[in-house]
Length: 219
Image 1 (cartoon, rainbow, N blue to C red):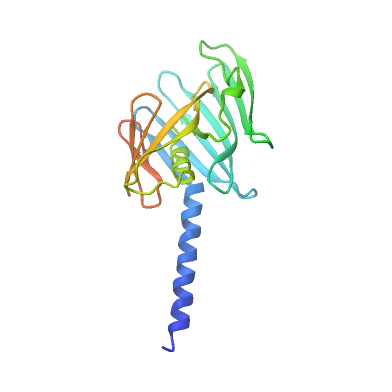
Image 2 (image 1 turned 135 degrees about the vertical axis):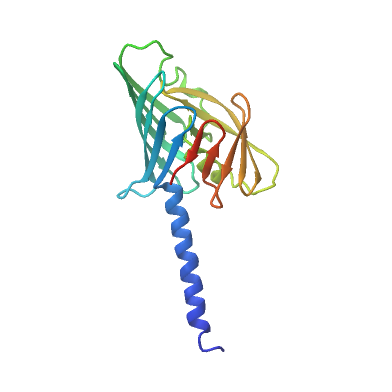
């Protein structure tokens, strides 16, 4: 046996473990995206005290400026099992709490204050939400990465369809439906099912880095 083989193996194993930790950390944050269609940013951070909990802070300008803060609780398969979102604009504020119950069904609670000409938050009939749905927060790219991981998509495989729950921003309207994910290559993801298909650029870890005319990663 080579005198350094055990040390080399330990170094290689340690490096791989470190890379896994880094990948997991980046998938939970810290990550920063810039909006390119309007003035805006989104910062995603891992919760330092609760495993699997991730927070996001959003500032958006333009014709309907607003701020938002969200908290997502992920299970071991990268599926969102609870999401709370607060959005606030000039003279209005909305809160949404979406979570799976112990039996797997969804619950949804909302609060609204102020006056604004917009659709109501939440969903009237929560039974329309599929128990196995992935959750997609509009214009928040980390949710696309989590959905892709939960579906275990590999580059070049056939597209996979899944029930989806879309939370539309900034009004926090909850819309059930279906989404189809296609990891076209290592660095390209295509998502369809809610209007025109959307293509995203990915980094080697599957994190969304760019959407034409909408966003790009800054960190």
